[in-house]
Image (cartoon, rainbow, N blue to C red; front, side):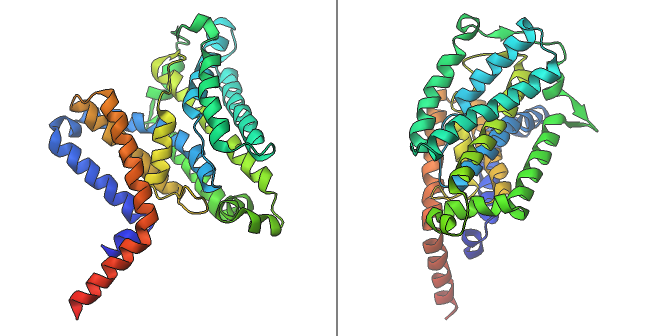
Length: 323
């Protein structure tokens, strides 16, 4: 138990196993092959968007905009392809780059104009979705492209393509954070921005860059969302920012910044998706699901804040029992 609270990966894994076990016990449909395959597809969008949210959290910021950004980006993508005649590969590239541009705008407002990230992304949460409703008179765009669904539902060597996207993107994020100067700077800025500035780091640039990464992740998530339903809609992505933040926090990322493991974010994303899947299988209403996700965030943050105290208490009790 002491190791559970001290190990950076053991706690998220334990939470994942407990959630999976509880879901399996409440509904036998959870272990159905079709449902498990659906889980693998569902987790891809949340986990990829959570990469960007985690980078922002590592610097001590917060991003509330990815859900609305995805709604806007799916509409832009659908309009480009279906009504603008833009080739599918080019439209995908432009959509991802537009996501990075949206992130750059938010990062610039937060880092260089010193508007708190909570305020800028909260404003974007409303503004991006409002802009999305300006496309196609606010109506969804269906049947975007005949080849689009293959991006999400296609397989390679018997495995769904989104799993390959996850492995590649998380490997890239892990390598960046662990072995590059930028990755070390991200942790340094989150741990102590004043000390990072005195060490010669361009703190504002790093704070802006993590939002660009978050925007690029939202762009990729938008492509997968559009491919999943072969459509674009201003209603897509509702609550996705909450799931992404919850994935990072459950994975052990500190909301104070400077601490966390990107691989654990993927574990946290899978935990969130299993919770949502279990609630859906048990016919729990959407409102209750939102409450549950909020409660999970509170518990995860509490465990993060009390990890040392809980670990020390368990170690003390273990030592006491041995005497």
